[in-house]
Image (cartoon, rainbow, N blue to C red):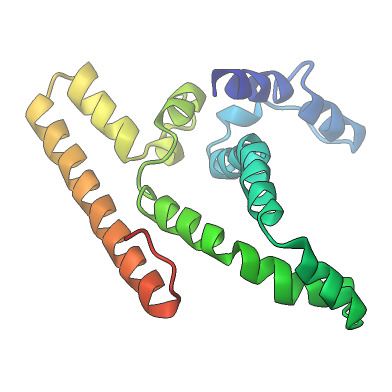
Amino acid sequence: MVVVVGMLATFSNARYGIFNQIIRLFGGEPTYLLAKRELFQTIYVFSNAWQNTGWRAIIYMAALAGINPNLYEAAVVDGASRFRQIMHISLPGILPTIIILLILRIGRILNLAFHKILLMQNPLNMETSDVISTFVYRVGILEGNYSFSTAVGLFNAVLNLTLLFLANRFAKQMSETSLW
């Protein structure tokens, strides 16, 4: 995570960053992109997708590898196109994996990547980059208000647990896949 944020800082540097080189190429004025509060959320979302794409690809490739190849052969014999194979074999085959990963992600939806946000934060983007985790850190550790930050952290954990149970119940009702 530290490496990714370091790369983001380098790529968005106003003097030599690749993003600003592209902006200059199109006639724009270079700027330090991480200092712009209106761009923080966009940079965070895209960098998070970029950072996690490899691991998610491994998970889904493993799920695809678990599908019986005879199903694809039978579909080809029946004249199914590649799109039909995806819709009727691949997606149903990896649907349990998709559901489990979605339930687990919903269970930690309020726990954003604290370390990444903390590394990307600066006084210029604090207005849009402050989340529950960084607030708890700032109030609890830096300001020494331990009881308040503990209460906020406990509320966050209870809310995440509630969302996990609701997502699991919904998944169990809609399909036969759930965590328990």
